[in-house]
Length: 175
Image (cartoon, rainbow, N blue to C red):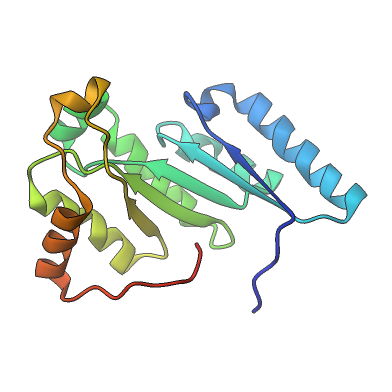
């Protein structure tokens, strides 16, 4: 089918939006009502750490969320604890699995590759290969908390992924 053109894009992020789930639902409902009243197409995207996603996914889908971005830097439990300073990788993965039950909702993983383990990048890329999910590798700025980790730039990320999957081909489509 053809892609729906959007006149307006709304991104819900910052802190952890799902902690204020009632507010998130109100924003989604309000946007959908405005969409009907104005005959405009609104694209709603939520960025979350995924900890609360499993429990709230059905209501997000029912409310009309278009896309969900999950911030996830590693699939390694110990590395996850080091990066986030808490437990919770299993809950994030359960939330991701729950979100995949709603194929009408676009899913992306935002990954800041901060670890020296190249296998981590490959494991995260596998998610995109095996599922209808886009994985975006985002460079960390070496400031603040970012100073505690070795910087991993685009060239290094591409080198690791090309070593595992072969030559990359740039795309021009917007996702």
